Image 1 (cartoon, one colour):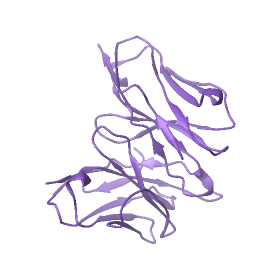
Image 2 (cartoon, one colour; image 1 turned 135 degrees about the vertical axis):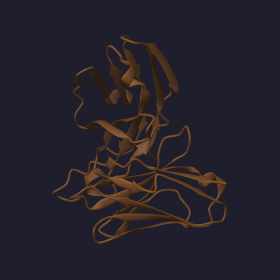
Image 3 (cartoon, each protein chain N blue to C red; image 1 turned 60 degrees about the horizontal axis):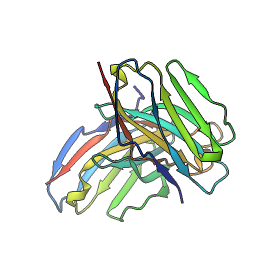
Image 4 (cartoon, rainbow over the protein chains, first blue to last red; image 1 turned 90 degrees about the vertical axis):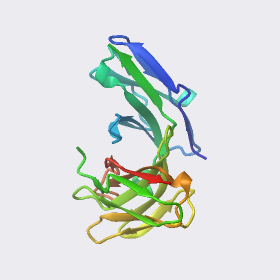
Length: 117
Length: 115
């Protein structure tokens, strides 16, 4: 069975601080995909990153970086020099079949990030 | 913006009624997935439609049903509404198959309130 755990329910940081959002997943498949989405107050889910299970390289995109470690089943997300616009709920998600079948996503419960000016 | 649209934006219904939510997929996409997001929770997969057929279903009762049309737009129907059906309903379109990457693009959602 698939499971995504985001243990941090809410995090508050002061602007310009770095913050790491944790994600731990469970799956029996050897091929799977991991995602991070951002959900601002408007409600629309904004795609941030997709990673497949065969690519453990860390990725950096501007102030965002992701650390994927299969050994600990974790896919953590770090925001460097946080800004007020980063305030949102962030979801980690897992997909198993992806391109080969129903590519539905299993989401964690989300982490609400508040960046204080 | 993703090009995925949903209507209506907000809806208020009474327990026991039926509701239909609509989703227009992004151009070139052949698959629509529906998710239910209760307040304070992550989205939960309801079902997916691929080429007008159901292509996977989550743990939702049969009173949740759907359709996909030849233009790949989709409807979500919920019968006998219950208070717990109050949630944000999100649809996501994607392109499955050899020519697609399967990436899901989400619409802005429909907020359903059941009283």
